[in-house]
Structures are given as C-alpha cells and as structure tokens.
Length: 297
Image (cartoon, rainbow, N blue to C red; front, side, top):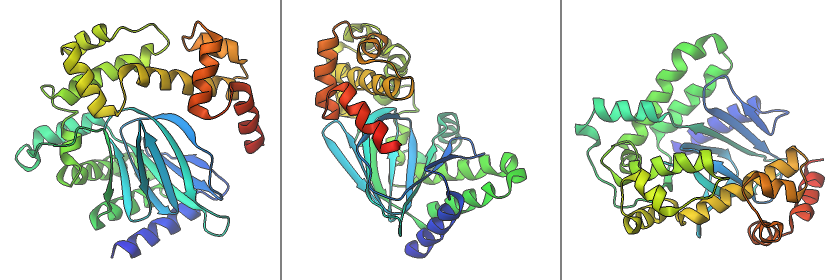
C-alpha cells in the first residue's frame, strides 16, 4: 500500500513542479522541490519540519551524523538545525521530487494539551533529527494536502485541518516523543529551543555559553550536555555554521566580497573566516562562490 501511495505523491509532485526547482505553495509552510540531477552539498538552517520524497533520494548531514531517506521514509526535525544536504539520486528521466512542510509549534503544543493521555510516552533519544518509515496515514494526508494546491479557494479552510492531522499523526507515531520534548516547558528540549531562538537572532554577535545557559535556566555543564545531545554540535559549532552559511548566502545572492561578508556575520579576522569556510565547504570563499554561480548559471 505504501508504494502505491508514494507513487501517487510522485505523480502530483511531478505535475505541480514542472518548470520549478522550488515552489512555495499557497499552503503555509509547504514547499515543493524538483531536481533533474544530483546536487552539490548545500548548507542552510532547517526549521522544525517534515520532509517527504515522492521520487529519488536525499542525504542530510547534521554534526557528524548522516541521514539518508527516500520515497519510503521521511525526515523530521524538531528544532532549527544547521544542516548540509544534497540530492543523491535524480536524473532528467526520473527527477528528484520532494516536499518540506514546516511544523507549526503552536499547533503541536495545543494538540499535546488536548490529548495528553495519547501522547504521554517519553523520548530516549534527544537528537532533534531522525528518519522514520512512512505510514499509510501520513502519505494519505499529504496527498490530500497536495490536492488542495490545485483548488486554491479551498486552501484557507481545509489546509490547516490537514496540517493539524499530519502533526497529530506525527505525535502519535514513532517520532511523537521527539516532538513532545520541545513543547513542554519543563523539558530540557524546550529550554534548548529558547537558546537556539536567541542564537538565530544574534548569531553575528559575540556569545558566551554562560549567558546562553542562563537563558535556558541550566547550569553550564548541563546546558552543554543537552545542547549537544539535541543538535549534535556544541553551541559554538552551531553559531559558526550559522555564520558561515549566511556568509555564503551574502556572497552568492548579495554579491558581497569575502571580507565584507565575514564582517557582516561577526568575524573580525578575514583569515580565520577563510580557514573555517574552507573546512566547511571544501574551498576558499570566492572559489566556492564562483563554482556555485557557474552551477546555477
């Protein structure tokens, strides 16, 4: 049954994405993706999301962990994470076809309050990313959500209901405990999310771990432990990846030179910026940007 549903998802994605590599839909938080070839690694901040594939295969790296998923599995993130992703299976004949739906944490929190008995399992794995097998119920809901894109008048009334159903299915499924830990104020996951929210807004500022630990209401040692358990990196590594990813975007899309981009994201030393950029992206800044520009020309 799963194969047939995934096939239907691929057909819808194929029809909707003709002429687009990325399509932001009228459904809040839902984007569709199409690639006719494998891609180079791309870094970005992935918000709490569920990612499905109708056709092809994708790899996502977080810290030292690698996650691969296909049309029989979905990827879920419960917190904002700096990731490096690439399409590893795609061709012009059989393009990669996928979708990403951001998770509305307000809806998630309300569902936990409304149905506490059904969602009371605890998580033994605090990491904010995982891959799970697709279920028939999830695929059916996403098929119905895609159907709405071709009926735009129905989107405002029906899309929020289907998205709530998807989040409910996630909460009652294998990954429910992973999502639950970020919504309950007493949980360590919720406290780490508060620190991540601050880092997202202030990544270009100098940062002391003691200050972040205080914002999270944890000791420095406990904060380090729980932050790394949830994100697979230290707070400083998290900040560095956010800075470098934003610098890459500024150079590629805003045409800033390397020194100005480094300054904009909080580096004081251009040489340090160049060294750390090369370690993350495999080439010095301007060489990397020239390669990316040629690839997208």
